Image 1 (cartoon, one colour):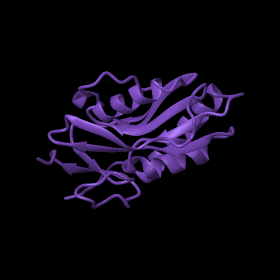
Image 2: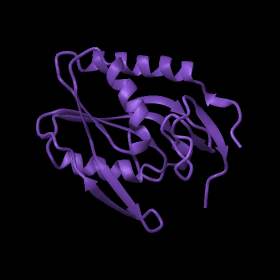
Image 3: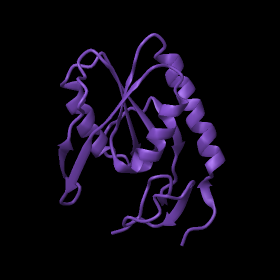
Image 4: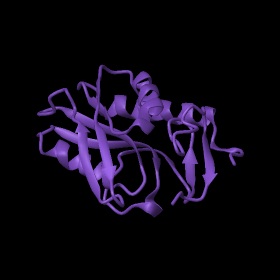
Length: 169
């Protein structure tokens, strides 16, 4: 059952605005390319783009996971050329395996710089070594839904982030 939010809509709005200001400051004079890594990041991605006060571009990739989380493949690659660009991957980080896979794929395309912006970070569940430059919130070791995150396709539409209970099997 869903109860009180872990992070309410106001807290999310404030934090996203702060992250947008940080990105705007750090990339002043450049046109960064933000790449959404998952469907779950869509609301965050849209709000983050609006919070950035410098020119930027946006793209998305799509990743398929299969098996016991060991198999990862890129279903849709970024359409915008990445060579020489300042790229920011935007996602929610759990184990870090998916993001690490995308990170390596992007590095191979020769960006000028590459950083990670995560709405939620779960360092206690991290398997892959992923450095997060812009971190929204650190999530406790519980399953979180809302603001794009789902449980079996439900709850993405909620405006806040809620604890949903234990990790699904």
